[in-house]
Image 1 (cartoon, one colour):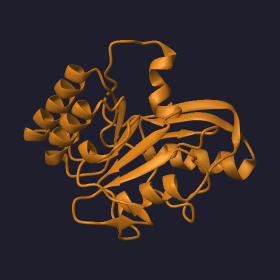
Image 2: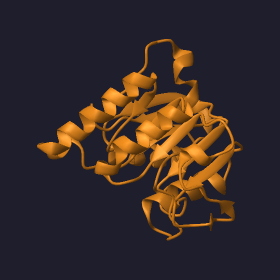
Image 3: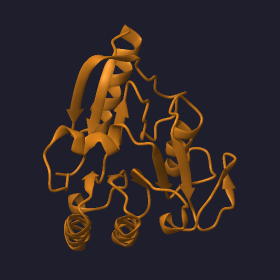
Length: 201
């Protein structure tokens, strides 16, 4: 899903050129999705500001944690959401109130499960439209930018190589296929400009 009132390419800058990223559902436990996303953004090539959001932690990876995105004393360009599906609408509402420009929802458990979970995803769409936010996901691995090194993946650097900067851009619904292609590109020395795994449509 991608929600916003403009189709201009610059409308995607918050995904690929974000100056600040909040990881909502950040975890202190290695191997957890929220930990690996935070680690990939905070400890490697990305140069922007990174804010872990976890109401039960004071610090993760040496970074101050915030109970909510609303408590972050800075503008947030991009939020990466890794919380349970039923908690996601409230988190997206908070992002809208904060003025977050773009959101990646890596969590699964939405319309792909049918039933009430379709309604949860519909509510996320409604909130995104209300605030004019763009969303990639849910049920995806998100985005990677070869230049800015934005990396919302929950695959660790030990498990998956990242390619260098280059001229190739591609997107895929499947995160597994996308990871395979990116690692192949890295091993072959092929440069990537932008990558999107968009998940549910």
